Length: 156
Image (tube, rainbow, N blue to C red; front, top):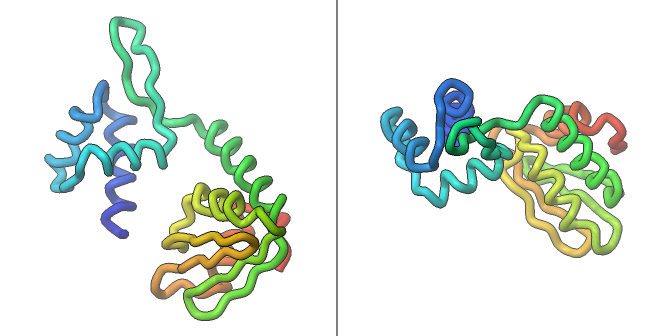
């Protein structure tokens, strides 16, 4: 997973510093840095980073990163989605259990995943409960503190 985080940083760097018109071009830059990435993985990374394509004002399109305002707007939307269904949170070791209102676990889980928290490996949603797995060495208290930074309104 560490490789993924560094790869995402590299993708941001390339899009910010170079004129990237295609995934093929971006794959070439990544391969030069030693990343072995498939087009499917790159496509998922671009979606995760919310990368878009805009007209270059000439005859083509280039990849662009979302603005800080867009990122903040997205995080606010995810925070509202999270709070809309959230009931409680408990943790034990590297497992976090989040209780939700019936039918809300999927949207709360999606919101949590979309916040791109480094402390979190992933989530599994049921009907009214979410299991979240934390990275090795991350405690439930650390995760909750990081979550409160993203969603200050959350209550234990």
